[in-house]
Length: 94
Image: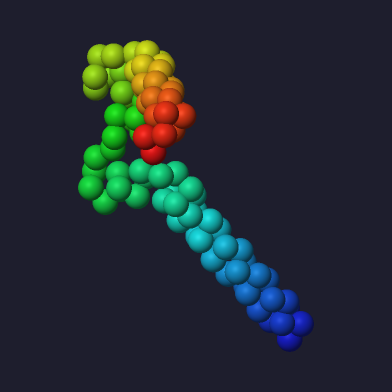
């Protein structure tokens, strides 16, 4: 029947639009939404920070170090750098 063909066209077009939207979202989530991911896919390398943030068990296996300790160390380093910048700004160096 003709009405089944007409409904099939609509269902097909809606499914195609849904697939296209899903494809675009998948690409965005896999690249721009997670900085460092695109480089990992193209170069095959990641930074230490990316590894301990996204895959702590793998980081531990590869480095033999606890990712939480490295994360805390990095956090302390960033806080110290920020403190130095603020101190220099108060002294008028920047």
